[in-house]
Image (tube, rainbow, N blue to C red; front, side, top):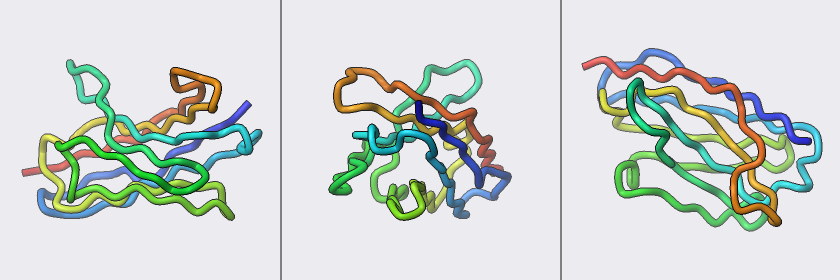
Length: 119
C-alpha cells in the first residue's frame, strides 16, 4: 500500500503562485508514475501533470504547460507541483495519485487540497 498526503493549497489572487506537495509513504518502491489531478465543482476530473518516479520524465496538458511544473524529491518521497500565473479557472481540488508499473489506472489517491484563485 501507498499513502499520499497533499498539502500547500490555499487562496491566491490571479497571477499568483502556489506550490503543492504530495508526500508518499508505505511501499513507495512500487510507484511508477505519480500524477496531479484537479476537479472543479460540476466538472470532470482533469489531468494536470505526471512524473516518472524514477527518471523524472514529465508530461503536461496544454492547459497548464508553461505555468505548472512537477518535480520530485526521491529522498523525501515527495512530489511537488509549482503553479505560477494562476487563473480563476485553476480553482479546484487538487489531488495526487500514484500508479504501479503493472497498473493501467492510478492505484492510490490522496485526499486532495483546495486551491482557490480569486480574480
